[in-house]
Image 1: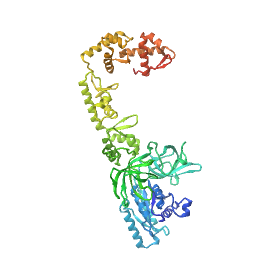
Image 2 (image 1 turned 180 degrees about the vertical axis):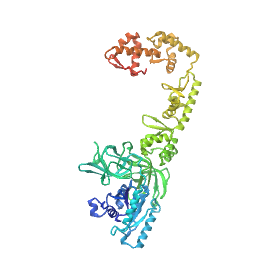
Image 3 (image 1 turned 180 degrees about the horizontal axis):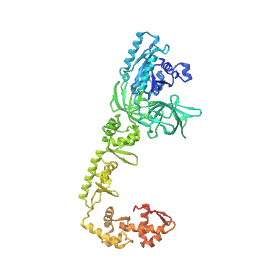
Image 4 (image 1 turned 120 degrees about the vertical axis):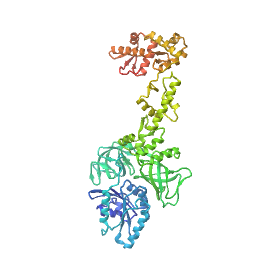
Length: 635
């Protein structure tokens, strides 16, 4: 369990940690000299057989950024209030930050109890409970204690031990993410980073990425607490010994993430759910400049709201935050908002989407998408998104932004009954129910086309998209594939038609085809040019060409070039002759002359025919000859 301290400066946080663990978390010379915590301190102890890690945070108002870095990814808050001072400004701000970070478990230690009487202790406890009353920590136990005489320390330790025995559910299902809060080098080991494991697990030998830089890193070793171990999991703090060809101490900073490679995708435009603190005196308006604290990082940016709206103190709203620098954020991450001068905490919230749109952020369609995304359950979110994604849902982005592992995503796809289509850029998902309805529309369109145009062999995807409202190519593919699998439709080349559809030519065109076929069959291998063929069937070449193209779409002819149409059987025979000629040559080289001699066809047909073979990968031209590829039968 990871415990973060919180509270005003000089209220005894570091002293309390030292009493509980025996470790002085102030490690910097300046901290020793000044007697105050400046940077994050760390200490570990074993209670009840479980290791508890403490993150000691600074209490000074100018170091709230450091405090937020220490409070991220922790399980438990140890709020420290000095009995003599009582609740102070930083006590209130730290408690507010813990609340917006979503912390639900903690306790309050009223320190320096030996310096006041019982009446004062009662007053401070009442002050503390008043501050906690509007937070998720309202039920936190309050324990008076003293580091000097040991009063209350055993009770405090017992409470921590009980909390460690009942850990909060960590995001163990997701892939690995660690928020870097320290980076340093160790003689003989090399580069080491430390931080809280937000999700997943890590082992020596794992390959990870540093985000947002994208530099690859391999885990040489890891430690949890003071001990080397074989695995670290969500809910723990760990130290990773990293190595990599481009990795350097200067290239890793507090606020970076060490994560599974596919989770890398720095974000700058976030759709968020935010809540203003009740203590604020002014509403949050559109384009307000802010500091956003996320994990151990911070970045400046602006809050975008719907035109004419604002967020009143204590109120919540959906907003978009546009950052000046990229962060390694994911859906569900918590953040803290402070004013642009980083003096005052304004509020905070939860990230909904890591790729908010530049335009149309407040359109009804986008609002429905954000509402669907703002669902903790992955299956429910996926179901709602598919219902609103007419052009398809990017499944890879969904999985990455929500840190859904591949195995879980595969199971989700089965649970929500979706159809996936791979495109050159992405993997799109469609609701099966919607694709079934679209498939019925496609089948009806094909049926109408066959009735009205019995001589039309089928429709292309482009033809179908023109006839089906709001259906682009990926959606049509998702609708066509099940129909093909069920045998309801068939595909010939680029054309789709209903199963059993037979082209019925009108009598004059059927007679024309028979005349053309008779001429071509009589010609044998030496098929005539278009002009000669047209003369034989008493047609003009340009008048005959559209009919020959139609016969080609039906598979009855093959267009070799603009001047030659040949019968499929003849084309196969010519390919076999070419194969035989090449086989006779030691280098399997097909020359133009030998091919003409063997087939007896004219030079005018030979050159277009060989170019046709070249275009389909049947042959490869080398100077005056061609290498024949016998495994390629695509004519």
